[in-house]
Length: 267
DNA sequence: ATGGTTGAGGTTCAA
Image (cartoon, rainbow, N blue to C red; front, side):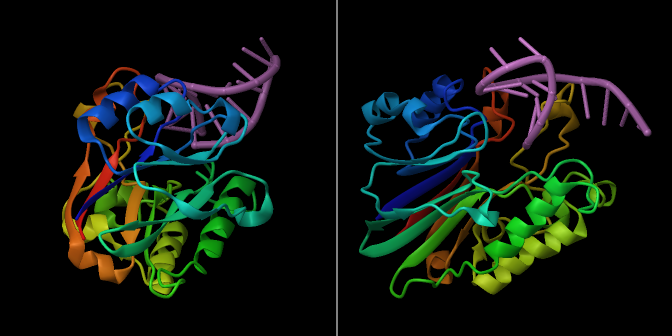
């Protein structure tokens, strides 16, 4: 049984519905996890998703900032939202589904970006990011007996050397500082997660999912970062068939600065 | 060291 799951930081779902529809029509993943929907739940454009077969939609929106959503062709159950750091941000949503005889829980995260200065004594946003990552270390891939797990999202950290265009030049840039990259690798290790993008593509190869809006020519400069991730419990590793990073979506009309990343499984 | 761009919701903040 085929299963495909996409994660995409959409940077305003209302503004970008034309390219969301373009993506859903061309790729038709079973489940789409969105981050930075930047709207409240009652402002989410349900109808165009439903018209394309995504009848199961769960939301954790907020006014103006952040916000996560899961749109699915498969029924979603036992959904919940966690307020990491207890600050009232909408940065996590989770649900369960069944496919190919498996029960699977999916987590969709939007980790704080962390501001510019990588020092929590002068930049509270960096402290918030570190605290958020610390709290994520408690999330285990085997938390529910008999239930597999998938964790996706914009984690705003590029953990490996080849997850950024220049490891050396990025070491003091928020998203690739050692305290962040060590922290995220610890979340993976302690939680018993598999980094599926790196299972599919060796750590020796560059891999990016985000390119800044500020570059004159994002594609020519190619100063990307791998900020978006797909992890799973170990049992799903053998079922992974492919990973698709839709680089071309960065060049679409009114693009997000992140591109869709899709994991293709055969369960 | 600075500035480059984008979005939401207001005339600034977060990314």
